[in-house]
Image 1 (cartoon, helix red, strand yellow):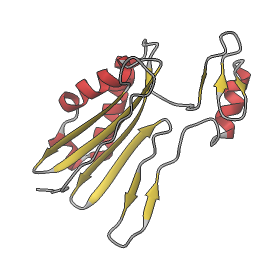
Image 2: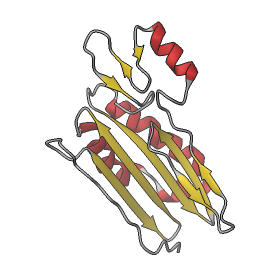
Image 3: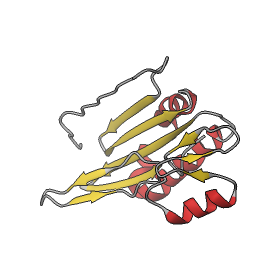
Length: 165
């Protein structure tokens, strides 16, 4: 059994009508799965992920094939959120047998500290961190204003360049 001790979560709704951020903690004797979803343009995609992850993530399969299991989960969540207007970042960490496996989309970073004090930090998929994605967005008519990719027709903008939904 892996014991994490305490898992602490902090959320701030801000000026929105609904909370758009969700989390999942799923644990059994083989490992623990931690998930954070940071919704945008509504809560629908983040809420769906929070509701589906406990049922879709197969803990016993993850012990044998952690990377494949995380990829299958992300793929299925992508299918289920593809037609939604709302979207969400997602950061997943599965810990088993003293190893951590991560999968992520968006700009909600994963930071893992080793017992030796070394830090591993995930890449952020946002407008300030990936020149190739900025060029691709520009080719599709997007406008980069220094921190946000904006739709020139609506003025709506997002910082992340990858997400579900």
